[in-house]
Length: 184
Image (cartoon, rainbow, N blue to C red):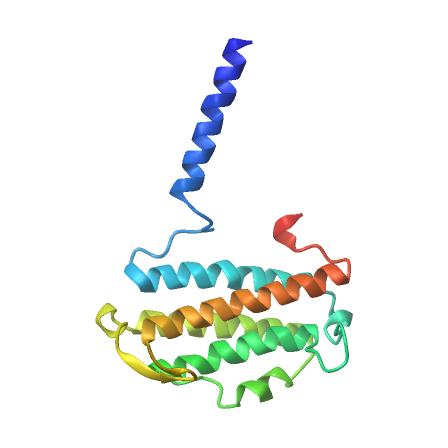
């Protein structure tokens, strides 16, 4: 019995050590992207992979579903995140590959395949935007909605924005009996 208790204790310590060594990150940042930019990419990947996985899990006939009148539908939530990912890097000096305004993107389609493709492209654009910067650029101030912020803060705002709408999409999914794939 004492051996079993010790084994459980050792396994618990190993699991706790592993959690501390890798606190909530699915994958390590690419070695070529150090510091805050690597942290940003890991943070974005955490939300982005889940957003895409959830978009794939939602049946196509639910993309027009909305919890109430005047509230974004499933497709509009995913496209809102995509439009922001494509547009907000313009604040840090990176051109958008899509010249439409974010609200135009949000209403552009409810076709599942198109929504997922645009969401994936937007996430890649956002990661490439971070990669295009140099560490020395991150503290440069840029005009933002609330005044001047650093390029670093602007990047982290966009990552947080993806997490915000991931939470919204999770709530929508749960309301429709859809279990997020990573929590099954």
